[in-house]
Image 1 (cartoon, one colour):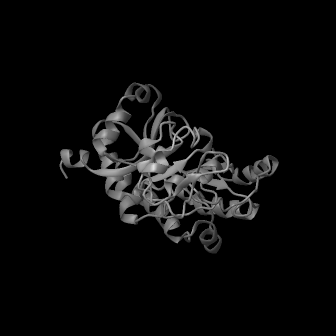
Image 2 (spheres, helix red, strand yellow; image 1 turned 90 degrees about the horizontal axis):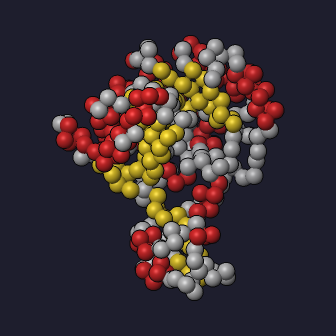
Image 3 (cartoon, one colour; image 1 turned 60 degrees about the vertical axis):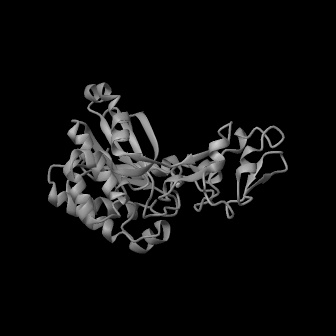
Length: 307
């Protein structure tokens, strides 16, 4: 592809977050791509799972039906009706995600997650903060969802970023084509790679997929790029991988691969998004005791490069 063809490649982005310091080295801009092959029960970005744009509804922003019914008037399938509190109710089973209601909502109660963008429009926006990247060692991070689930778009973003001398990073669940992830790493400075569990059945139960492809891909990119900076991240999820045995298994698997390792404590910061998009939070009302997390971190400390 020519540079112009790369710049005009299109994909679906649901957020661009600036001044991030938790998604790779230095100050970074994170571009979140929609779509993911996994359906993790604890996912903090449920709006990222679908590959297409979708509606979200924040009830507290609705200015009531008495004041405004623009959304109800434009909805062609009757998915928006008056609730008992004089605010809109959304019938998520009826909604077709035509997005028309978000276009007319004056209060921003109805919004759209997901927008088709060109590579050029995204990288132009990221490049506005190039001064911060140069001073801090930061750059562009692709997140999601699973960014490599839009392979052509993700690769084009990485190529264009490299052409403009930006440092790049990616956050990946690893459940993608080996060919794609190995190709992508040509243009990446830092890979943040999730290893959630080494138990294939448990992995499938909690994410919808087993872990074989994920484990093989981690080994493949380390073999192809012996000096690439890779950070394995494991979110500690109650009832899923929160035992010493689970963490020891991950440590033993990754130790020969010479990667960094980071344990992330479970949180419920994304649960409101489930309500706003008409989804059920599948993990229920669970929590992670901090003392228990610290004990698991002691287990993880057997890894020589624990973060």
